[in-house]
Length: 413
Image 1 (cartoon, rainbow, N blue to C red):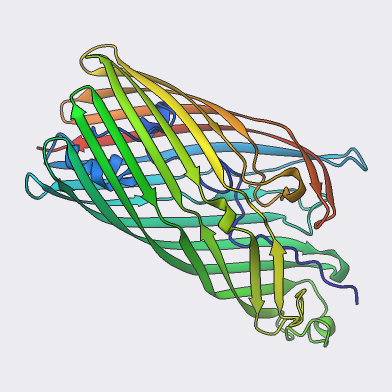
Image 2 (tube, rainbow, N blue to C red; image 1 turned 90 degrees about the vertical axis):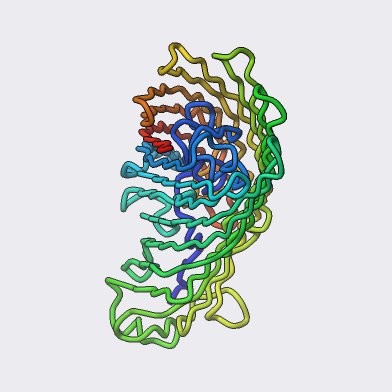
């Protein structure tokens, strides 16, 4: 029996809306201004900086919204010159936040977001089908928080992060004539966030925030072989049993993020914002799958499979602006540049990431205490070479992506 190919990227199967598998879609108003963070108009600031909730101009604030993310990746083999495109469904990241001012100095809040997750789907007969055919990732981050306002211009906030996620990954096992599904719907992890928010004048906002890594633990995973003869499943070379199933464990880091943001109001109607993000992708150096019985590994213990990832830390640069066209109607524009966390040598089709320039725009309208916001973004990923000798995966790749967002805010009193 040939050695079974199970080169992996468990839990990381997304088309990158940002560098790596981070999805920067946690606020419609923010996205319209390049997803910048130093804004305290409503509860959506809770995800970006827990200290920002101290400066929301309302005792109670609620923000909800969602996005439609349309993406496509095209890969061409340099050996056959044949091209393949992904058939990704529309991604639907969501967010919700609530903030309440308990006293003049103390505010509490809750943010629920999906910062890691989407689906990448390749054709069943594509050349990289033994790496991935389809991978779906979902994650939810729940962040309760508290903020203390020292005076009229400075606040500190802290949040606890509880993460829950799932992965559903299909790949071909051609030499056995079947497929393998990797599934876990109960992965969990935890982390924290801290931040300072300063508002030294009515014209200037300054935000500094850190969100810790969250180690997602998949302790109840099930690996299922289908279409493989029962005799092969039970053979000493595979050892998964006649039902084709085996248990596995794995861990995946949802990486940490440093953010510095500033907003300056040039005139009463016109403001400009800028952000710098630093992402700690280096902690994703490898992925280890620990199977219960399956002898599909590449270590001395053949139940353990280690796949190199070698991600590198990345930066994102953002600049956005808002102009009040009337007292109730705001127009917004933005641009950001986002780095891919890996080189051509480690390009992987489960997370087809690209250096990308993104142009954003949107509008907002206030109906009394209710606000409605629309945003759109168009990504221009840079085409790149595919040169992964570990996966024996060579060629070139390019991509395109577009995002649309609709959000609502309510500042009650």
